[in-house]
Image: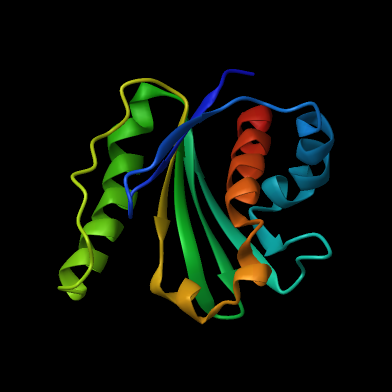
Length: 151
């Protein structure tokens, strides 16, 4: 697997994530969820669920706790879907910034290499306790690698 660029639009952080030694097992555990396209996360994260919208060369997925969306992620591994996926997540980010005049803005640009994962942290996250969501960044990357593995 290639390294994944993991970009958080809300703060401009961008890190290169390499697959870990546990990635094959994690991908195996997440594969039923990837194939179904939605559902609750495996225990001990069963209070959360994900909805995945696949495209030919990418996907957009949102993690929810109850009815509250807490993050939306755009994953792209092919140039044919790059503009559409980037438009979806960057458009969501720009809507959030426009709705909150106190929100910091970062001029996000589409990554120049593939694959990439662009994340938008949604307002619903503020109602979550840190210890309940501290795993979320790792999960975003693990799910992205599972989706890439299934592509």
